[in-house]
Image (cartoon, rainbow, N blue to C red):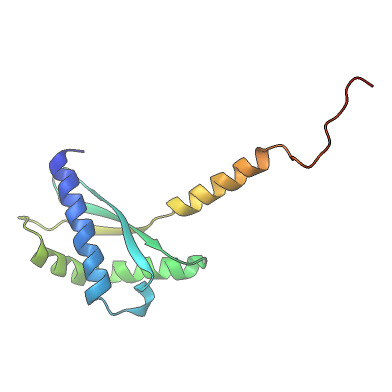
Length: 124
C-alpha cells in the first residue's frame, strides 16, 4: 500500500469513528468501533472492518448490518469531511480478529503439557 493510500485509509477511519460516535444515534451501534480501513488504489472502494464489543454474535452482526443499511447516509457525511474527488463506496464487515486470536490462544493452551502431573520415572 502506498503512503497516500495509507493516509487516506487512516483519515477515513478517523472520520468514520467520529461520525459513528457523534452523529449516528442508533443504539445498535453504540458498542461498535472502526478497527481498520482498506482502500483500493483508485480510492473507489473502502473495506471497513468493524469491531463490536460483546459476546453475542447476533448483536454484533446486527450492528454491522445497521451500518450497511445506513452506508448512503454515512458516505454522504464522510464526503463532506474528506477532500477527495470521489468518496469511496463503503463496504462494512465484522472484524473477527479478536475471535481468531482467542481461538488460537485456546488451541495453544491445549497443546501445553500439564504441569501438575508427577514426572514419570522411566528407570524402574
